[in-house]
Each structure stands twice: as C-alpha cells, then as structure tokens.
Length: 283
Image (cartoon, rainbow, N blue to C red):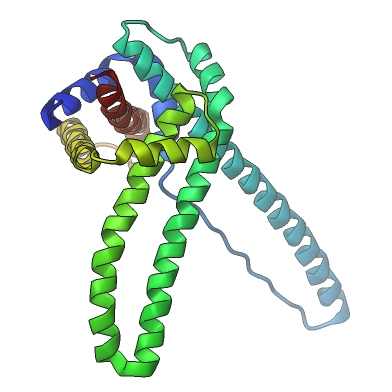
C-alpha cells in the first residue's frame, strides 16, 4: 500500500466507525499532565498559632485527598488508554472484514489485552530512557575530559547513531502491540516477533510514520476550518453579550468539537499502524 492509500483508509475508519471514537478519545487525549501546589500561613500568638496549625492540618488533609484522587484518576485514565488501544486494534481488524464492533465488545477486547500493552509500553519507555541516558552520560564524561569541543565532536556521531535506534524501537513497540493483541502473545514474545517482522520492512515503518503525520495534519486542518469561524463569531458577540454567556456558548460548542477531534485523531493514528501491519501479513 502507498502512503496515500494508508491515509485514506485510516481516515475512512476514523470518520465512519463512530463506535471506536470513545476508545480513540482515550488514546488521543493521553498527551499531557497536571500538577498542583500549596501555600501556608502563620500567626503571632498562641491562639493564632493553634488556629494556623489547625488550618494547615485541614489543608494538608484536603491536599492529600486531592492528590489521592488525582492519582487514582491518572491511573484509571492510563488503564483506559491501553484498553482503548486494544479495542481500536481489534475494531480496525473487524472493520477491514466488514464487521462492526459495538462499544461493549470494544471494552471486552481492550480489557483482555491492556496488561500486555502496558508492559510493552513500559519496556519501550525503559529502552528509550536508557538510550537517552547513555547518550547524555557519554557527552557529560566527554565534556569533563575533553571540554565542550570534545563533547560536541563525540556527541554528534552518537546522536546520528541514536536517532535511527530510537526510531527502530518505536517501530518495534508499535508492531509488537498489534502482534500481542491479534495473536494473543506475551510482551517479550510479541517484541521478539516484531523485531523479526521489521527485518526488511524498515522503509514500510517509516512510511507509516509519514502517513500518521499527514492524516493527523489533515484532521487538524479540517477542524480549524470549523473552529476558527466559530471562534471569530464568539469574539464578535463579545460587545453584544457579557463575557460569561460567551464563555458558556464557547464551552457548549467548542468542547464537543475538541473531543470529537481528539477521538478521530486517536482512532486514525492507531488505525494506521494496524492497517500497516495487516497489509504486510496479508500480502
């Protein structure tokens, strides 16, 4: 398949298979994080100090509760992200067979495979961080022994070697996820088969990276065509309405659009890799 054929098929599934949008949203939204902070105060006398201590204790309990809730929410969403990935892989396979998959069936398929998918992702993360850590360590040692010029001269060829390696392990991770779901394999077994699968198919993997970028760009451009006129209209309404109604209308209109956009992008990006893997297996 050519890049445009892969993009076209992936966009078709992202547009028409609405039962996959929920799982696409889980996959597409996992790209950021949150943090928080706290402050404290004190008093000048015993009563004020006791009040401040009580307030700090209450604040500490509240902050601790919020931290626990945020941790639980993050863990839940992490699990849902891999449940969604498994559901999307299975959903695209069925779509290529002309069979629709319900949301309930998607959750069942995703739940059966989220564990192995997260193990593959953790192994990929460890390999990536290990590579970057080794690169930084070599540059730091070279900087101490040879100076800045030596670190640069040594770092540049190391970077040339590291980039293809990082791309390779990314491709292995993407294909291993499909192999784990479609062939019901364990993490190391799926990674081993993905390495064998990638032999002679590195160019195919690079084509999938390009296809993912082009399709994501296309969805984003279409979304901008929808969002920009609405945003300009809301700005024009500011002199006529108070800011609160305008903000309410913006949330009412733009938030669903953003959610659909995220769902379509997540569905498309996962579909590209599944299509790319199946096109090679079936050929």
